[in-house]
Length: 92
Image 1: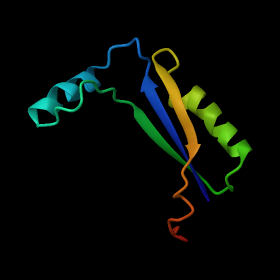
Image 2: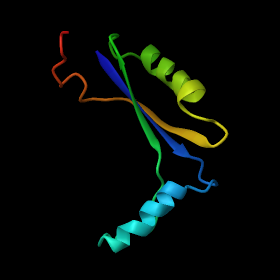
Image 3: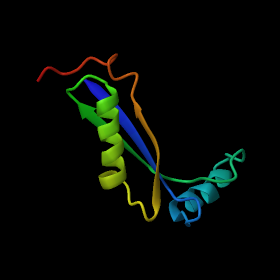
């Protein structure tokens, strides 16, 4: 079994109100090390197929056509989860 992780972020030129709200809250909570926050989305795609370049290519295509809105978001990462094979899978 393979797991592909897809990260999607708002385009840098667009306002990110959720990230701005988090950035404003962090200093009030004592986290003064951070000046800016951008909030995105993470998808985990599981497949019964073994990890392969073809599976990764299919995940990239799904990321661009289904998981993101190309008008306002960028797909920033599509990668295999190296821990997926280390985690015992439920046989059910």
